[in-house]
Length: 157
Image 1 (cartoon, rainbow, N blue to C red):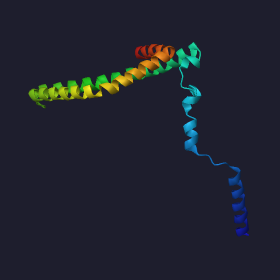
Image 2 (image 1 turned 135 degrees about the vertical axis):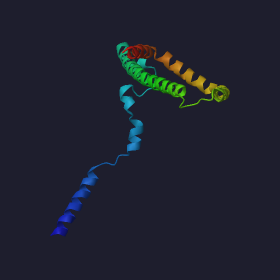
Image 3 (image 1 turned 90 degrees about the vertical axis):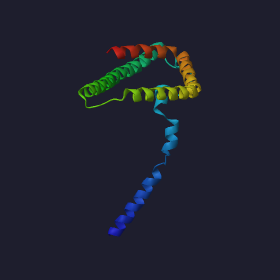
Image 4 (image 1 turned 60 degrees about the horizontal axis):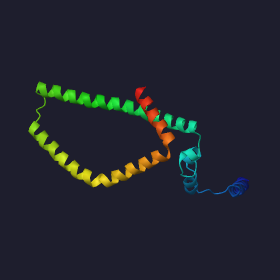
């Protein structure tokens, strides 16, 4: 009896499997990104897709979020760096730490020379990024201006 029930269960499961279609999720995900539902599939400027008010709201909201996060992270970073410098100075004046300032100056000058050499090599890559960003701003001037306004409001809040 148990074998018969298991055989019926297996046959019923086979019928259920045939009713479902196999879906390749990687192929589906490539064609259906979440931003396609928000922005759209074509890659033209946003001015062709949304009204001016919608563009300003989208840019302003994202700008405010970035500005707010930038403000919070900036305060935390400034507090950490300033506090660390203050503790280092207190430790130095108390005699816990002896700083060899000539070695520090020598290391800083060496680091400056290395950075100048690397900056000259990286300049073409930076220029292409700047060109792409300026092209995006030109194509989407309304969204960009909303973003800048939102960013400034986020910094102020």
